Length: 446
Image (cartoon, rainbow, N blue to C red; front, side):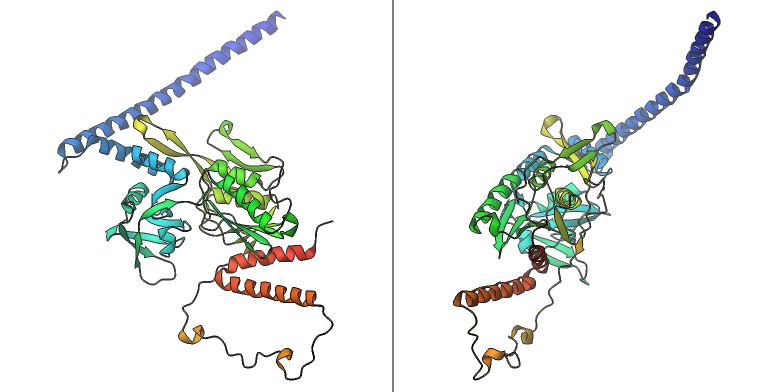
């Protein structure tokens, strides 16, 4: 027993010595790293002083420091940035659903300003700006080399003022100018309408108003159709929705899911990860859902599409989404400024990270570009050769149908003609509605 104790003590002593021997180099490495950081900070101080005292023009020290902070953050990724007091206040206003500007969500790609999506009903959307457009100049000044925040600042201005932006668009051989009149952007988070027996919910952004608007408008449309039994399904249109608040994406997903994970976030430290689960209750009462997405669907939109897709609660159609799978946290700083820092990636219920990959639709449906019409195409097609049996002289009447049956046939024909017109106007939406009709034709599952 005495030998065992001594052996144990000897092992402990050896462990202490070994620990001491290993800790020495580790402490030395940490000290060297700290020394290097302090040297770099001294270098920053030297550069700052030289610019302040020797630059060809006098500069404001505060602006220099803000620019340095912003440069440090923007070097990390396109979504991290410094927010001056004015920018921080403007962002808070935007999440409440009303702000001034053009009405576009932009990002930076290899130094160029790229449109993620125009916002419905805004000056940019009405001027024809499209997702994927690159903005190269504003009022003749090049945007190349500017930070994202600086470029956005160039595009801001008084309500009612004109701005000329130069756009490079895929499929166009030359850049072209677009004139836009700045306006106050009042976001209507959700728009709704009926197409036949289908309810279309157009979600344009995820702000504080999104979920309440979605719930109230969905209930209004259900009542308009005479109750849920008269509804054949729902289309949730997330095309050109640039995203917004993570909490709203979770609540919108939860509105259509009974249970299960909606999204998870994972930061650098595994302890900081979060999982968000659905609570019982389906706003659509089990009716089929089609989600529409495209290259302008980003961030919160992708969370909703991914959650409903992974749970097989909805069929996702359209084109691949934008691929922004990161979470930004806004951290208040002194002087009412703030910084927006990427702190986590998010994952769909199946564990997919859509960062840079996007959500892939279950069914890929491109939106055809309209070719310019010629004068001949504007003219209605000739009716010659398109007659039917009913047009023939002396044709027999169909006396096997009642007036109610004839009326039903005429109503069905009118719906089919309306659907054909919708295909010309919005092919992707028409396709979504056709899918819902097909699902209903199969009948309820046993």
